[in-house]
Amino acid sequence: MNAVDLDIQAAAEDSAACKWRPQGEFALVHPTGWSIARYAVHDEWRYLLWQPVDLCAGANSSMFHGPFTDVREAMRLHRRLALHETE
Image 1 (cartoon, rainbow, N blue to C red):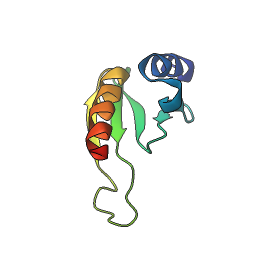
Image 2: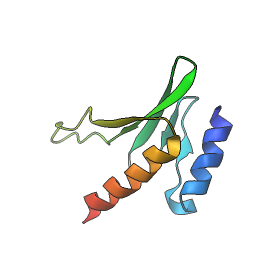
Image 3: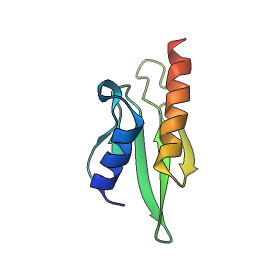
Image 4: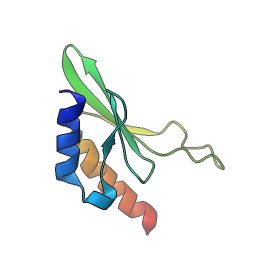
């Protein structure tokens, strides 16, 4: 899956205001500060969902979720976790 394929999947998941956007060839970024990185394991893509870095606390500076076999799984978890952050 190339960056264009990721962009198409990202566009299907979120509204225009909260859309995942490609950043380079191996990442998607979200306006909330979260990111999804992809990497290959035995010629199959895997995805990690990374939380934004809190420069004040620093406690979650390397917190990630996954791996996922489908980028949409990471996007769905982001939606749930980001909603929890705003409550």
